[in-house]
Length: 76
Image (cartoon, rainbow, N blue to C red):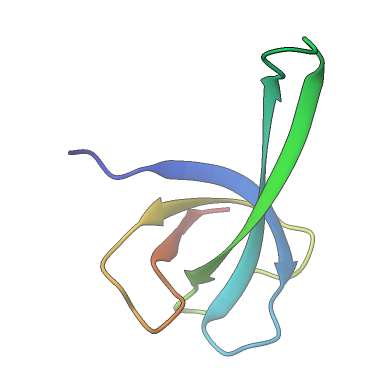
């Protein structure tokens, strides 16, 4: 099974080698037929501390790096 790749915006880079990425998805509500925006935060591994808040990044699934980190930054 291929690894998922998501695009989002870095919301926090306060921790060493970790960034918090907010990923937004849009979908049409099944009954109301209205476009809904939902966002979810993922903690991703950033080996070189290269990214800061506001950067657009792509993240990819990986083996667990810590209790909360299951993603790593692919590129900026």
